[in-house]
Length: 127
Image (tube, rainbow, N blue to C red; front, top):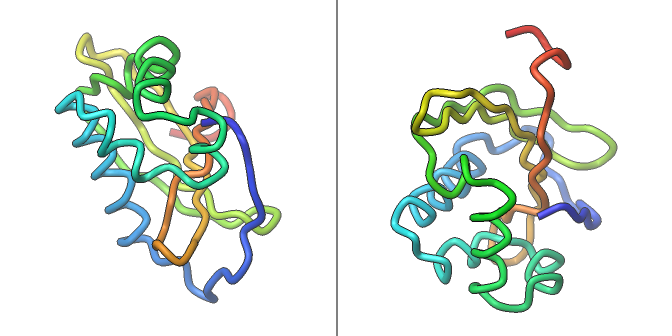
């Protein structure tokens, strides 16, 4: 979940609803512990790194437990930076601790896909 690829063919207006739908569907898959479905939302670059839904699920469970088993999820701003679209997401784990992530999104023939998830320090922006 930490690799970037080229973001060719970006639209003039970011498709926020479609992007949020993809990220939300992946959260739903993680809540259901459905590694196979969660893996379908990953970009080809991410799939190439992890190779299997199982490997991907292990990485998320161990590295991002608040994403694997989230409490509250809130979509914040969507921005374009250096040719990539980033969706900021606020995630509260089940104990109520809050985390922020930038989801790097790429558009492919299959639609919008998650190309990386990057932790953001809460001091990097105003809350």
